[in-house]
Length: 247
Image 1: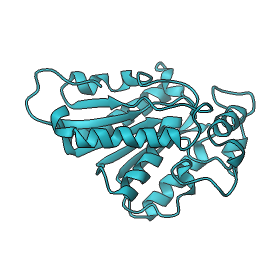
Image 2 (image 1 turned 90 degrees about the vertical axis):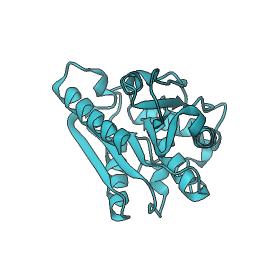
Image 3 (image 1 turned 135 degrees about the horizontal axis):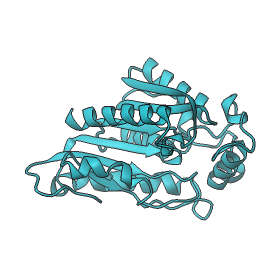
Image 4 (image 1 turned 45 degrees about the vertical axis):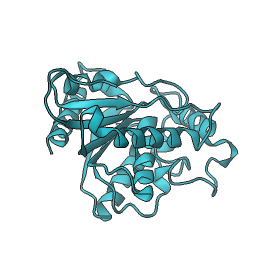
């Protein structure tokens, strides 16, 4: 957890779920993204240490994330978090887990979320979209890596009927009642089509959605900060998060 110093009163809370394909990473992964908001006194950041597949398959990861979110909601006041400004954020596998955790929070009635920020999220285990099949041996996360990640999480259930919406949020039929959502994706990554489809269906369900697809960007390309498209995507994401922190 990261907390600002010298701040009077409650600030927004960011609950972070790290990426890593469901199989790697820890609570420190990606936290550098949140450091400026904490250092500037605008947020408290909490990052969850969820159990990883394949040693801990579904539903362990998403249930761990939800348990951490519940703890944060119950302790919001003592943590210095305004419970009306609780933002859920995740990238890649963490984006998929964030979407599943938001569905759990809605369906179980706690805690209330003001926003969800889903960065190139991993949402669909079924491999039915064009983009899920288009990269083979290219980039940091191609269709083979994606198959390995989903199979590690779901085993033989992957792609079948016995997979919950909390594990693979693209399967959710009812997307009403979810918080305002930011979704981004590159045009050259396996998650592209499922992210665009999820954003579209959220919007059709009455959720306010900011969707950004970056032409020529690949999975994790925002780490190449010298590239113009990376700078544009980082600036756009930052602007949304700052507005969410002040909402």
